Amino acid sequence: MKAFRAATIGLLLGLAAGSASAQGVHLRSGLPLWNNDHGADETYPKHFFEDDGFGCSSNLNFGDYRATRPDGEPDDFWRISNYGVFHCALILRQTSDREYLAEARFEYMWVIPLGEVTRDGERRELLAFQIGIAGGSEYLLLSRPKDSLQGPFELLEPTCPRGAQFREASLDVWQTAYCVVETQGALKRIAFAAARRPIAGTLEWVGDEASAPTPPAD
Image (tube, rainbow, N blue to C red):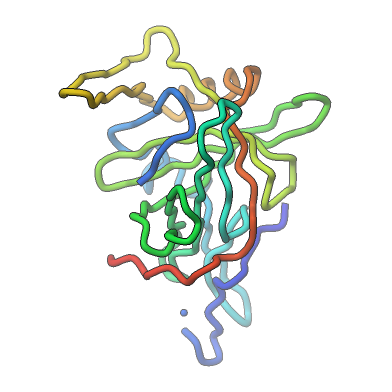
């Protein structure tokens, strides 16, 4: 599949240029499962170097997406932006109103291909969004038609497998609850199992960024 490179190229001739899960079960790891010591070459965006430029290539389209859930909950809007050309990462922002995406809290994100499945006679690619890094990572599981950079995506509904650690606590009316994922293999197994169940929602590209985001601070 040809990677998407819009707005990421630095020309050698002169230009040297919170996430709320739609899934019922939150998947988290204390350390990012894909990191410099294990699997970084599988993540997107990826560095590329050519005769006339360099930068970061992505396996999905940048821009604004609408997340819709079949339970009738209000739609959310997601903005997926490129971080830069020297360090490859995506920037994810989420709000309930597209107008305010530019000011929304952001997380760093990477996309990991997990494999392929056939769903309703269609060949689909399974993906994980690895979101966050400083305090560990959260994982969203998705599928999309094979070779489609902008989807539409299906948001998969994972379950916490038997034997995995499920952590939960409450404080007043607020609750913490998540499933601890300890290995890449465990996340892949969860994703393939989720691909056989009813989906949690859809993620549809609605266009380029409607307003320029404020660049994140390093």
